[in-house]
Image (cartoon, rainbow, N blue to C red; front, side, top):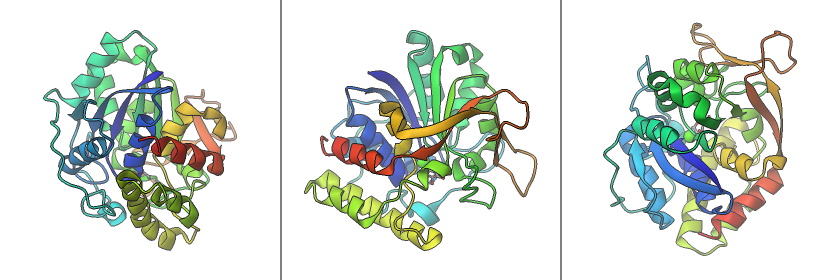
Length: 311
Ligand code: BDR
Ligand code: CA
């Protein structure tokens, strides 16, 4: 299996991404999970990671806390999307499993130094703060990273937090700039993909039909998440973002994309956090990312349902 570190800010869709990884042991080995401040503050994202692991019975996976705030800016959260807890939609007990004492960035650095080069993939489901800080503090790890796979950005679908920007990039654009400029293999899963992966009633019902505590929690989360997004986007269900990152690792053939240049806007107030994606390759700048554009949504939901049913 591919070794991964997940850096995340749960978030209902982050929770599903974690569950998809845990349900896919033949393809994915989760070395550890780092919570970062994002959708909700760090104390809650850290708690939510542990809630998800306990729900899945995987308290053997170490959980670390990364950065609470972006590199240069105050944290902007998204309770309006995810609810006050970040995981509204399912009533779950307070987690009891511990948080590791080591800082999440130290865990990332130490793991990349300890594992053979080119074997560890960093999966980011929130702002890129921890990855940027790890790259800045320990540049020796950059050539050891197999790939960074990130949910973030947008091109044709433009923004969900401002007209120009997607939430994860907008929260910490300076961090995104560091990661996009690091010269590391990078796959970007933008809104262009996730807005094709809609949580229709029928797809949500398949989780409820599992008749398990976990299936009920997933359906509850998606109902909560969908209610908001259906009103916002007027589509049949809301977009499901973060699990697409893990799905790409397991079944890349479900996706289409292009190797292109992507730069991050950090100056402009109006377009801060915009992923300036050279889809038509007009800039002459060298490609730095595999920018995904399409997804087989039915195949994706089949994978998600099948794997989560095993937990
Ligand atoms: C991203 O922002 C968060 O609200 C979601 O968890 C996802 O990672 C989508 O813009
Ligand atoms: Ca997220």
